[in-house]
Length: 326
Image (cartoon, rainbow, N blue to C red; front, side, top):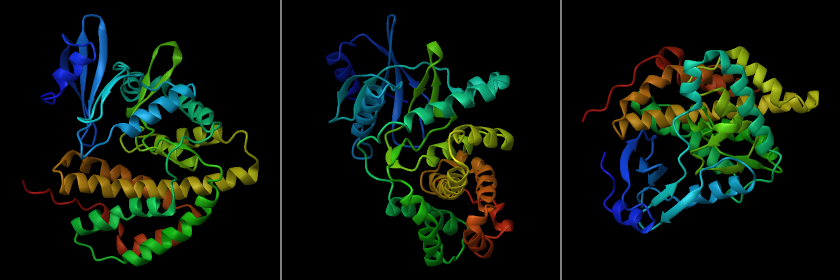
């Protein structure tokens, strides 16, 4: 993975002329990352090439989070014309790998990440767009736009969207006032820093929405199995200061948003395979279907569960998606 052509001049103008670059594992987007070494100094170069990417939302949310007291990377330099950002290096101690090596720390770390959400939700939402019905529906429809065609399924797309509209109406009503929703709050985007701090990454798509969304993102992780008993314990921990009726409503919204998010991810992972040739994302689909089916068992989701039973029966959900041809 070669650095972008503009990187050398950008680093020189930023005071890192003699730095060496090495690639860092990226994500599912067009963004790429490089670790920048210059003697004892370390930084991360984000390559967010226009027109595919725009680093301005990342910069804005990073600055908002830092101003609110959370550990987001400091922005050292930026070149918006070429989509280059030099930012603080949070190291390599991700929550995911830390727990793989130290499973006995699981409950303590999850309690810490849930406490961070509780703290974040006490602050007014960042100045970002609302997580509105149109956005929720665009995401859910990724299932009918990508997964269903990949499985050669003719489904009731209109009924699917109508069901989501009915389910999401009370969720959206409860987003008043909204909280900052980071939207990719999971074990691969949490860095364990010194002084018992948690570093936040991958929040450029943040919206103002429901507090249950990031809780679902963490406790129904697309890339890591979270035991059911741990999910329940952490959900109860988040709801410790809620009244019984408020907790019951929150759990209902949690299940609805869990189903919405897991539906969306099945569509996204299918698109990454079919459109972008990233076949490794298909390996996550069995977990995603398991999480979605768990959410669909909530009584509030009975109409959506019925739609899935008719349109995507269980036998199809376990059927592999044909790999895209080069």
